[in-house]
Length: 314
View: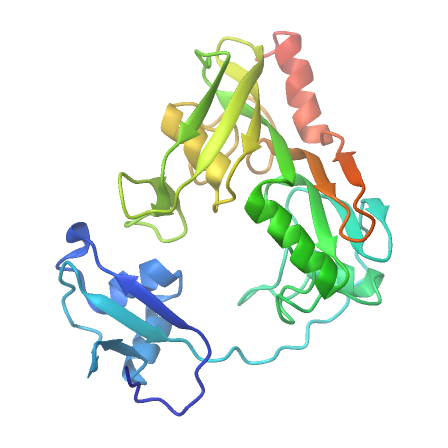
């Protein structure tokens, strides 16, 4: 394949159109698939960075089922992310890893239009070194939490630790469990949701369950307490897809309390974002081989909801 570019080419993304994708404008379709703005995708198309076979395509091309597109993404421009003296709730730290209890409302890493006030800005101030595997935008970040999900995260301070931890997450030997407060009376005491997740066709900032063409996603859940209109559940991830717990619980009919994307209904509780907390993390230390177990205290906003539920105040 050949691209009509200036040679500044980083990764090449390959995308195959499904039957349900047929008829869409190429710029709209690829913007959704790659989670970029339509204007950015139009610029990539204008620059000759999208081909089908050997043919360079334009923005108004109508997608056909089975089309295979190659998109040459430019190398990201280096950005100097500034350290910021932002308080961190550190659960554990040594020369290889930092385990953090992230507060709700904190973005994990910088992104366009949001380059300050993130966990990465805080880490750069706190740590002398971080793993460079995920480039200057995401140094040390092995996995992430949504902005409005609180709880435990692990950060790598060197590349060897980063590789080990990433492999543990991929092989599922690193274990994560979450506490969630959901709407509705969850019927079964426990269960497993195995349903593919893909970007929502109508809103590229959302994910949704699809029958095919998505990424495999598996979530185990168990009921901890029931209160009729609300239920407290523990969720364990077998995979780590974007918004996975939020999407899977909404798919079951039990959306998370306070979730602005998947459950925008008003609830009688004060919480800014979804009631979801990453509570437990287990992993093998990348240097010592010791099995480590950490827990992050449930945040005050969720604890107040749980207290009200137990007192029947809803």
